[in-house]
Image (cartoon, rainbow, N blue to C red; front, side, top):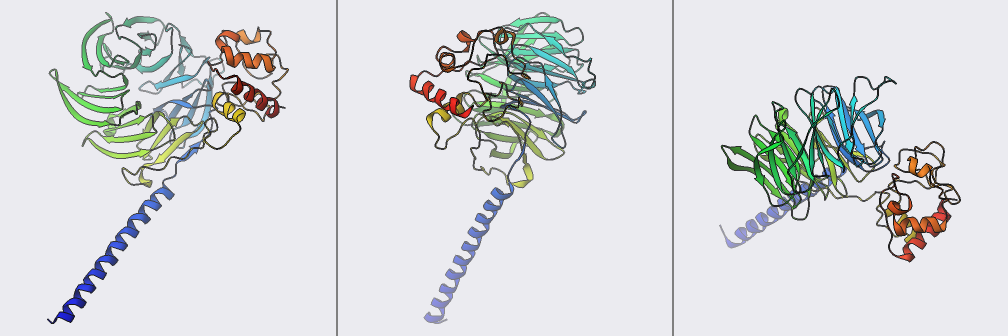
Length: 460
């Protein structure tokens, strides 16, 4: 082979290599682009505030969502179609849990109350929920025993309550965690309870006697979420420092099976599906991780929402995950619409956390007020607070159609520049004590004045 032919062959090979490399890059970017185009979530409207909790009952084909708007919505699980709104809580509803058969639905909230709803009698106008009231601070987790006769609740009053679901009576109150209790799980036989708390421990309790059997894990950082699989000896949990972990405990020896850590991103959601060997985690940065518990491999890892994932559930039949967060909507991702470990770009479209250029008054309203109130409509809607249309000169608690607290109805406040300024300077706990208003304060005089000018113009 002469030198000229060799050089031509070499040039040909280099050209072919470059062409193939370009084709590979084109295919890669095309695949990435198509993943983004087709991996757009579905949004389901219904709530008037952030979605705090989600629960599913495959047996009843029901999905329950709880919200900052004080309500619980029931949806057809397979179609995500709203079927009923449940009203009763006096504050944000944080958690929902179905019993094993789906007959009972328990909800707990910032009002320190638990409502137990009979899902088979919801259309009966005479049916009313059983109300359990013994906690003195917000309730953040609930669990039913397998026989559905007992219910456990985790409260930020540092206590665990055990209830009789038939009589509604308190069976026992367990205190032992050093700080708020964040999660509870019954044992399979219903005689013991697992709990996790702000103190970083996961503990096992005798629920009848109320004493601690042993501390299973002392993590150091607070444990936010917990699931137990006694059959396989698995403990799944997520922590305040961003750790997602699965351990197998056998004869007192811890064996780490899975660990994923994202610093500065507290784990805020966890649900477990033993029938499908799946678990799904969510964190405060909007990340969702779908874990195969048989292989201990991550099947999907992506940014699902802009902001925290307050709860996330898995639908095996439709191969989707449904996310609740700071949006008013339920967000459903089809898992087969994008490839694994593809971090989808987050899109900020929340009405109460605008990043676009706004006047300072409008910005204060978006951040402090819009989560509960509307401006441009007299419709009551589903917000936690009444619409503010025509609020200046209106007597507090007087708008027809909205369910006010007795404290606000009995007050003699007339909303004007002075009373609204005082409300945000001193706080609702001083100006309107005993009402449903969450604590919102604006320290700077100029910010309060800008908000008032904005409200006077926008609510006419």
